[in-house]
Structures are given as structure tokens and as C-alpha cells.
Image (tube, rainbow, N blue to C red):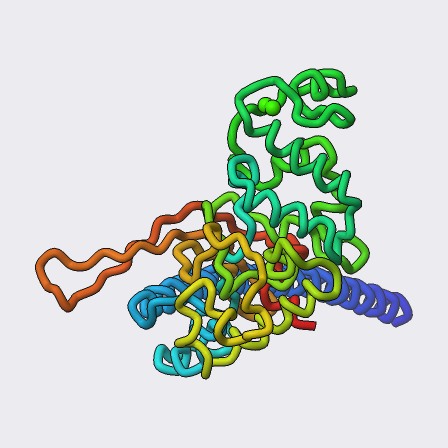
Length: 355
Ligand SMILES: [Ca+2]
Ligand SMILES: [Ca+2]
């Protein structure tokens, strides 16, 4: 009897062991299954987020296409500056939480390559450097401007005696490289130029970086209707410090009002509208009130996934050859990159200057 009970006890222990092992296997399997399904749902979310970002891009281009024939000027009260329009999203049955982004006019920025060839643009650049928030000494600002001109010009004669920036200088560095003697192909190239530091170029201790105010895409002219405040303040050649800042704020307040949009067609509009600035000296030949190159920073979300696309496009009007009333717009992509969006670029240069 006793041996029977012992045997039964042994069987029971064995069965319990088997059940315990099976449960462990099942728990393990279940864990793996749920991990797999989390992975799968993450993958689905990421793909959906990317698709939403592409949708955002299409809607941004549509917004710019519709704007092209609306008015003769391009200003901050245009629809593209408040992208995405909730009504447009609703008409396409798109959830406002799924897409977003900003559209900014590259033409509001200082065209980097023109610093080398235009006295007017070079003057604006130097004033940008000496005004707040950069507050560089005049000599340092002029040397940096000279170094940019030497970087682009085809010769090896340095413009500055105290801070020469031609091939001899770059060849004598610890890691030598050549002076380009050609135009900038990318904004980051500026980091190779004598006098340019990472602290000046990138956002630093809460101060926006110089890169926010320069462009290689737009050429020759600055749009006075969309230029960020520090660029506006750098326009007058007869103002500096607080007066220049006040000028920029007054211009900005006027140009942002939808009521004033029709007054912003001519580059000298403020001379009539804000008569206290009637005699201000501006680089008139280097100003414009229209835009044709835009930076689109759009994103899509799905669950916890987020995907971003950054594109610079040139907008060209192309009237239809067959139907006079039909007006087409052609977009040429000048630059495009996808995730990850550097944090420093996630807010636009024009919208964060209002404080
Ligand atoms: Ca040169
Ligand atoms: Ca030179």
C-alpha cells in the first residue's frame, strides 16, 4: 500500500513538473508572441507615419500651388504660413493629429553665395553679425565676410591682411584642405571657412544659430515680407542696435496683418505706410516682395511613431498652352531628406522670432 502511495506521489510530482514546464513554455511562447505583435504594430505604425508624412507633403505642395495665382505678393498672412489648414484636412477626411508641418520662404533669408558678389548683400550680412543676437565686433564681422568672399572668388589673393583666408591659410591648418574658390553647394560648407565657429553657426545657449538666416537656394534678393526679424533689422544701412530692432518689429507688425496684405506689393511699401521710415536707407536693388523657393518641413504620426520629410522646392508658374484659363504650377525639388530631423531645425526661423 505504502509503495503504491509512494508511486502515486511520484506520478503527481512528475505531472506537476510537466505542467510547470508546459506553463513556462507557454508563458515564454506568449511573451514572444506579444513581443512579435508589438514589433509588428510598431512596424505598421512606422509605415503609416511615413505614409502620413508623404500625404502632408502633397498637401503642402497643393497649398503652395493654390497660392501661386492668388495675389502678386508673398507674405506671412498667406495660407502657406498657417499650414496645415484645418478645413483642408477635414475636406480630405484627415485627422489633424496625423499630419503637420511648416512652410517657410527661403527668399526671406540672406543668399549666401551673393555675399561674395553683391556689396548690398555683404552689407546686410555684416550688420546681421554685428546686431543682436550675434553682436560680433565690426572687425570680426568684416573678416568673416572677407573670408566668405575669398572662399568663393577664383583667385588666391586674400582680402584681409590681418586675417587672410585663401589657400595658404587652409593648407597650414592641422588637417589641411583647399580653399574652394567656388560657390557654396551646401550651407554646412560655411563651417570650413575661416572665422566661422560651430557656436556661431548652430543654436547655442538659447541663441539661434546663423544657419537659420542664410540660404544657398534663393538667389540675389531678400523678401522683405517674409524675412526673419534679425534679417529685417540688418537691412537698413543707417540704423543699428535698438533702432534697427524697432524698425524690424514695426515692419513685422504691419506685414503680418491680413488687412495690410494688398499694401505689400512694392519693396518700398513701408515708406508710405510707416512714414517715420520714409527716408531709411535700404539695399533696394536686393529686395523683393515675392517668393519662388520654399522649405517644407512636414511630418506624419501614427501611434507613437513619427516620420518627417524636409524638402526645398522651387515653384514655377506654367500657364497651360492649350487653355488660357488653366494655370499650372511646376515644382522642382532642390533638396530632400527624410528622418531624422535635427532638433535645431524643427522650428522655423520666421515663426520663432516673434517673442
Ligand atoms: Ca579665393
Ligand atoms: Ca580672394
